[in-house]
Length: 217
Image 1 (tube, helix red, strand yellow):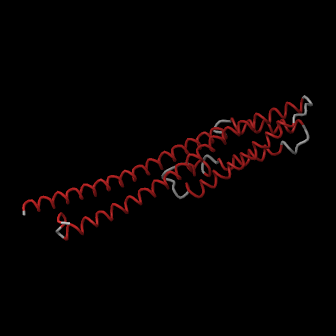
Image 2: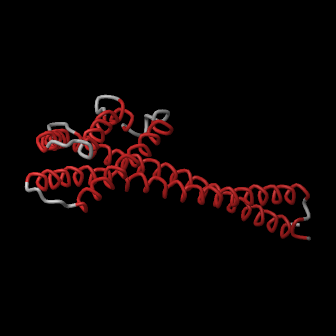
Image 3: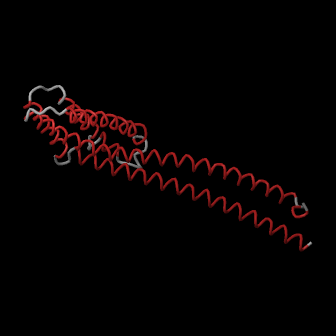
């Protein structure tokens, strides 16, 4: 222990080691949390894109159902797939809507999803209206009524600033939100790394200072 004869240098070295150890533990835990957060964000981006595809598929299947009714052709597969699409759409809609309510409403600086869902975009109401109309296909008996519902679904989806445009905008917003959060997390991780390098540099300087004092003495 001749190298660290000076008690003040020893105490400072120990303090720096303690700070570095705590920083490393915090950095590892933070990285694990950020990886989980990234997986969650990518999950929301993926199901947001899937939601857009499912709405298009729902309209397409409703057209098949109408065609089958007109031609008196019984095709249970298309009805089963349509019901599955509607069920998935409803589930995804609830998941994304809850995400916006629980996360985005209190963090509007990072995303415009709140405006898309509950503001001018009114996506929450539009999606619920679309799902309600799609469900009517299973209860209507008249071919004319089913054809009318199909036309309404198509109009809701593809009209100017309609559902499809809102869903595309929501997916882009999800992507931008994920990118912003990931960039912010990477920035904080870099600060932690720079702090660790600074502490290591201070420890090297202390060792050099101690060696210089010993050689002078």
